[in-house]
Image (tube, rainbow, N blue to C red; front, side, top):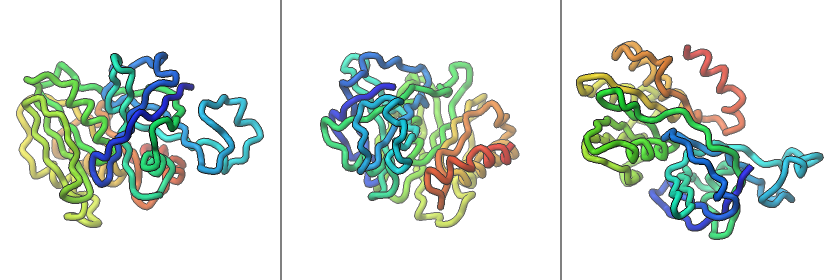
Length: 262
């Protein structure tokens, strides 16, 4: 496992916080070519006796309520020259371990993690790229757009809570970004899929990256398969979270939910 220290924190929107990490063991960090590269971060409960860095042996005999909570987070940017790792967190008050940690984070605070993992990057062999995601996926979408050349085309559907919650996304020149606002379609699980259905796609071949809330991702997946003829088995489509479920609850049922979509 690796660890790093908080260098600084930026508030990108009312719901998104960027934590920039440096130092620690980042000199051993091996970057991934994937634009959805992620770390497996280990968040300590506030009253845990553990301190970062800790070893696996330190977990022996430790009560369950004091053990680190693992969470995956996309790497927004890795600056190899400055040795700085940027992670964007969705932060809603004190709910959960990761978002609340990010909101409390101060320079010098430490975070331990494994990784990186990841599998998606924009294909150079297609004519354009389709990127769909909410706040939990905007880090990966931003990293994907950052990797494009100025001539590359992309169509982005970016979901946030309401107007004023947008974040800056790279636009190398041929990118169309459509912001979708959750409060304008309350309770409609198909609203993101409906936005895609109402959009004329560019001509040519395209690759697909769709991540976010489970029900919305499922509806987009069906729309792409049924109406657009997308081979969803070869696309990057996966839910990061599920409404009305805690992280722990979702982790327990996610595999079964994914199997039911096949």
